[in-house]
Image (tube, rainbow, N blue to C red; front, side):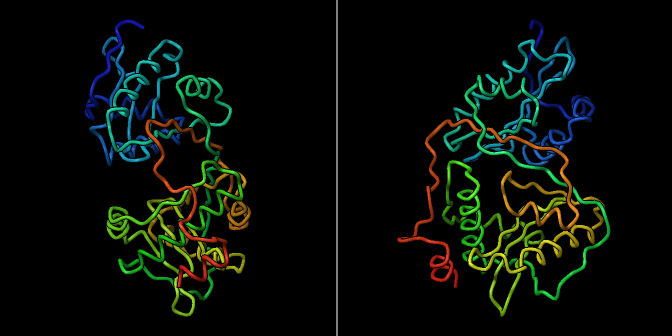
Length: 306
């Protein structure tokens, strides 16, 4: 399409237009708000005859960069999306830290899936976005406290191993395990007010993270799952979100993850299904499995997490 320019995002000019554009596409509206809050200088807009009709945003250039391309519906199939994609490819390929670009497509949006396929992306997994509206949940007599820096090693192992096993069980590829890092440790303590640990007999058995109205992360030590710890901890975290003034609690759960039944039993209901897509720019530096000799779920839990 002629008369289309790619320009830097100007909040006073573009914010209202983009939010109106996204008013019926809540997942993309949420992602745009994140991008604007953490990396507004990474937003570019497509303008047709002086009117903003689409945008490209990143959540910051990092190993896995969330990338969003959105074009106003009446301007789709006109080459604007392709123009934004070419701009994204140029920027991402120039960043040495970026290994892969991540994005989402809504289930049933075949034209968007076709578009990303043509540009080198593929589906890695699908996830249900769920919501709960209601009163506080009954709480068990559990011990929960905020995360402390001294907890980093054990929390990092619990989270990585629990999610590695979940990906293996549900067939999400590639399987991977991230080793500890100082940058991650700093991010954990910087977000301490949203990060919690559950204790049994003084030992950390579960890790949880919230943010705004979203339950972002819950993991239970693999050798201690299916004992009711997850249910009790999720109830506590949901109530903490409600106590902070949020009437609706949201979360995402991978398709095939057995935890979905737990969330349904606590009142969460499906809102939509997302397909997560990935394109690689450099070799994946993540470990393909936990770095333990003779690793199995029980042995690793007992040996590495005490």
